[in-house]
Length: 281
Ligand SMILES: [Zn+2]
Image (cartoon, rainbow, N blue to C red):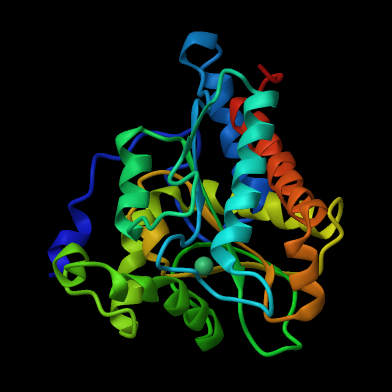
């Protein structure tokens, strides 16, 4: 039912322009943010990033994609737990909430609901990719209309888990992950947060390319259920291809997992400082 796509919880105000144009350059967004901060010099009213929800993709009966030796669910959890440790250490004032800390199954809409119930300021979901042997590199995704069939394919794979969920037709309003119309409608829910979602995504992508030294496939958009249902800036990180032997080895290794988590953490720090416009807490 299309009308229900508009009936989400009330949207929180964020320190960014109301003109939520996807193609708006990052430089311009920053200027908007600075102008708003200048008009609210009172520290008590200044925006603070207080709660982050960390989402390890898959889990339990849903192992995600697999390499020769490892499953996506396990790699995603290792990266998410390491990222959470870093945020807690660096920012004791920030509340870190996990959608799962162990190998359990959590429905896609429940992951977003956890973030909504806790009034999270940010939602970060970590996954691993699958494809032909030669495919490699990181991707950082935001909610939005897909521009290519390949982009739609990644979203379809990550959304397909709803078919393993009980009563999915009622939970997702009969949404069919193979329907192009359904993926386009997805973007309406998240549109208020797209500017900040892209801002974080670009920072994560830059960290992956520079300090972490990964091959990057860039920042992309498509209709991911787990992002669509969340009412705050949200990104989904594909940390590499488990179907590529070199990347599988990297992601199966603790040092590789820590490097990916470190890259996301540094981007989180930049994003937080950028929005708050002041020194670290
Ligand atoms: Zn996944």
